[in-house]
Amino acid sequence: MADQIRAFIFDLDGVITDTAEFHYLAWKRLADEQGLSFTREDNDQLRGVSRRESLNRLLKGKAIHEETALAWMERKNNYYREYLATITPEHCLPGVLPFLNAARAAGLKIAIGSASKNARDVLERLGILQMFDTIGDGNVVLNTKPAPDLFVWVAGRLDIYTNQGVVFEDAEAGIDAALRGGFWTVGVGTANIQHAHMVSPNGLAGLSVQQVLARFKA
Ligand code: B16
Ligand code: MG
Image (cartoon, rainbow, N blue to C red; front, side, top):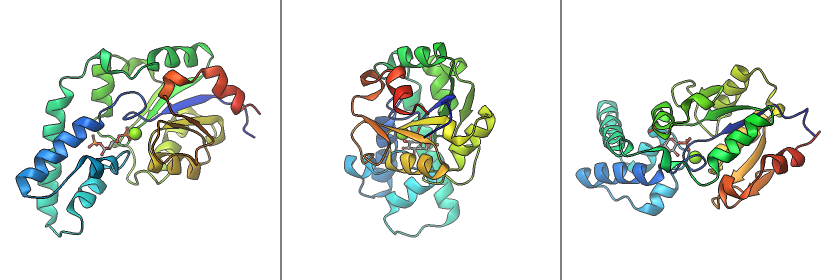
């Protein structure tokens, strides 16, 4: 079992807010313009996956020049950022604010571990950026989920051992990353996350801080 739990680390898209629809609309716009097929089912496979790997999957083996790849990723991101402009504090998923407040009240550090390079902007628009002790996003490490690097970077910034942290994730790649890093894991939602130590199908709304702490009590 763990040493005492000292921090909760949250993925962003799918745990704190739901930006998957905006990613879908942005990739779909690019795909339509380039004559590529891209469905909602395809988009579901991109949860927690970096922008570069998302493009690779969208291309389905089609080869393009590096310059073109960079230009397409920038175009997609510009579309995505147009949609982000509509985000307000009402876009926090149900139960998020009470859960974050309860975690802080219990003396835990709280942090973000998101693959997104836009994470800070999203958190600012949600009005919760200042609540977190550390923000790990798509800009801080080279190797993205399922590599453990991002969560390990966050643990370093929080000054904790990895087995003192619980990672909340909605995506298979994110749970794999946290397990490889030696963290405790809570799978949030209904995706392929059954290998997490604990699963909450109804998001943070279906969970209490005390329940999580009790599950990982030393
Ligand atoms: P960006 P998370 C992930 O966020 C999204 O789930 C994924 O769909 C996206 O491709 C990735 O961020 C990169 O996002 O293009 O904004 O850098 O779930 O890790 O919070
Ligand atoms: Mg996610």
